[in-house]
Length: 315
Image (cartoon, rainbow, N blue to C red):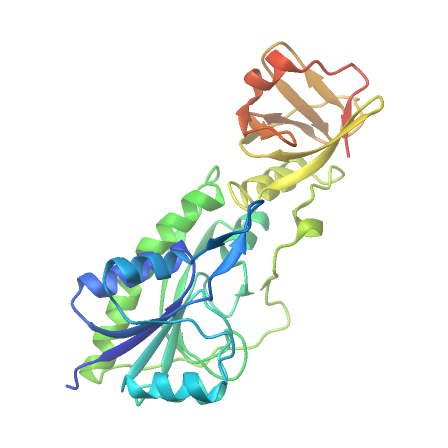
């Protein structure tokens, strides 16, 4: 049994949950690699990654390369003499990096591979109405999320679960799966399964403004899944129009009510406390939302300060 000496690569909160579990399981972490600091927000204040914040707290060596093929970076990485690298929500590695350690480099991906390879697997599983998902550890190769699988763990997606809630559950499941993977590698008992390629594989495309916009011509369940698959981040959005006023509005918590009606899809119905939007097979009830320049608020709070006409609609 050879003691593991690990370099960990990751950037967001999801990666911190995994790094913390490795740290507290007393595996040796030689160094942490994360994204460079960057200016963010209106004041362009320098923002550091969640992984860097954690590594600073634990006094772990930190590397923040802009170019993963840079010779100085590669020399510094090699100087840590790691025999294993772990990647969680980082970026694609060049071969010279992932082949460097004796035991290779493995990734934790938040889907049941080979489905949902790509940037946003947790979001797309919910958006597409999946009832189960999971995590997979696999050895990195020269393509994105295609390497030989080590372990995978399944979990159900609850009917009303949003992406924030599922993210947190998968982080805990992923943490345990990474520790199990580490023990297999350390003991020399790791076996792998090659991913099978089929024509109907689903992809976890990068999220952008276009694919976060709500399409009100879809069924109520599809719209509901779209909204909860983007809640609380990066958030589904739509245009509200009322006369000459038009707003770009983010929708957070919603419910789908199945009901027959003759209203045009996109029609907004409000009372003093409630708002619902007509869809082909019912209504999407809006529980919380955010108008531009305002904070996220409950619908009844918004309706205290804004009155929409009977002609108001979304598109």
